Length: 108
Image (tube, rainbow, N blue to C red; front, side):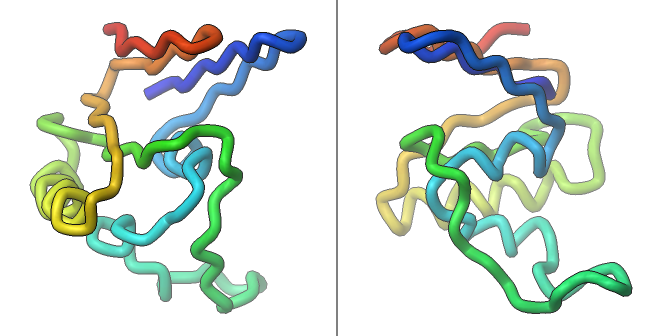
């Protein structure tokens, strides 16, 4: 998964895979369904930070319907978004989200 964003003021390009893409949303709740937030490598702070970078106004459910170990859990993550009225988009492995001004599209 690669995430590319182009903003109308100047141009910003961002690429990320999996967690590198989901961090762009405003809130990371729901991701704990697919990734244990308490699984922290030695040497890192154990405090959980639920705020994202707020570059986008929706959450991203990655590995959706993909050949990935977290793919089945992604369906439960989506259920969380639906139950909590959280805007989201799904990404299958190999897809990208391109944002150009007010236009957002998913490409393969």
